[in-house]
Image (tube, rainbow over all chains, first blue to last red; front, side):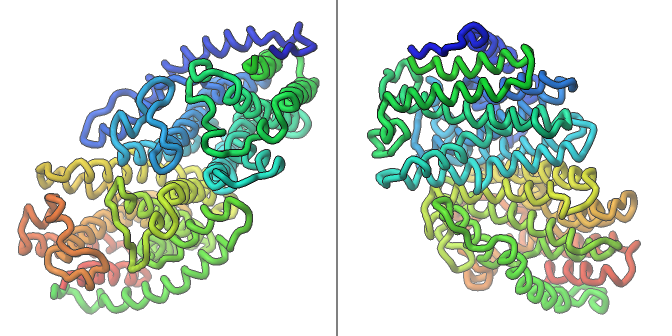
Length: 306
Length: 306
């Protein structure tokens, strides 16, 4: 158990409960947005719904809502960005699970999309979810100012394209049985998962047209918790049981993949996660107690590694 | 050979030559935009380049440039829309060629992306091209007015998502050994290929902020040539040799797929294509001789079925 020093203002339980509550309500957001469809193309819509409603922590939507709540903006706008980002995250999981990629038959205790339906449907459902994310962001319902919508689209596209999430996944796939060094792994992790977490924390500032220090603070916070999240994930992969982490433990080692934990060792990795946590907290100092939920979330991320 | 009646103003050779010339110059547009990359993610960028530079008729970019030239707009803007749409078309071909989809090892006489690289790279390169299309459209370089950029993004996303191209592909895959009726096939074709052709013809009007009759004329033209193009494709599949059409002839029949041609018969299909051609031409009557290249293109589409 890694106890953060400044536990009083960073009780991980606060974020844990809030995240759980949020995840439950987010199911309704999805249900409302993507109702059951009819027609011969219903199989792709049905697969999209199945994947989107399949649970998950909803960490990215949560980050969007909580960062956005630091500013005076219409929270309905943030909810649409949250939906778009969850579409993107879900598409990436569907495609990652495919036999040609990570070949995972299960996702959160349920058959993955290509098992529940078939591979063709999984490819198409992923493609359609990615497309839907941009359709959501382009609508005036997401923000009345088209400049803001275009900034959201440009930033999201950069975060998830060949120089972001997709590029990171490519490096990760090629890294099996190769020896990446620490800086290469850090860069790969930033591309593969960090960039979308950064976008999630920056989105509120984009919606509020806030630039400068406050926007930069959120970006810094996101970079720190993104990397901490990944290190903790790797630690759980080494130390946790499959049951704890909801997927096969020891997978990275089996695949011959170097991780930050395998390179630094468990002890140094834990120290590093704690340092990242502290940087995340200190980066938020320009925000008042409204940001406590983000501080608590950082502690929750760290606390998973017990 | 199907001779259009009003051949004088609709010489198919004019479009044929112009399209050929344009396709050659479009290679440079792609080269300039997507230079060779470095870094470990280079494999996905290299696959994107390979697929984008792999030739093809460049029909959609051509339609965008020629429709846009009917209006007084900066042609650089249209070129960026053309690039975005070709990214989308290329992504759809990469994913369609995958073993789980149409399982085509060859594309335009070259190994398809999953054969040249591997399946994982093909999935990721498709995903990254789709993402890149939206990144291109969101940039102020595509149009100074963000409202225009958002309209392009919204219309494109609708044309290619679950209720457009992807939905059409889903229906097409499910239609093997099912019996679709004529109206269902027409709807499927409109979703699968028609909607992106309509977007290509409408894009110039969007860039020029032109609405009303002139925009509707272009949409009508696109709907007619889109369906004519598909009927001619089906006719070539029945009548042409594999060499003529650059892919395996008789594929639809082998797959047990009903086409408009198999339902209507060759004679009625040819009549239908000719009717669609005439409607396409008559729809353009509000445009002067600047639209002759589009008229010629309609004749070229029809003329492929000799």
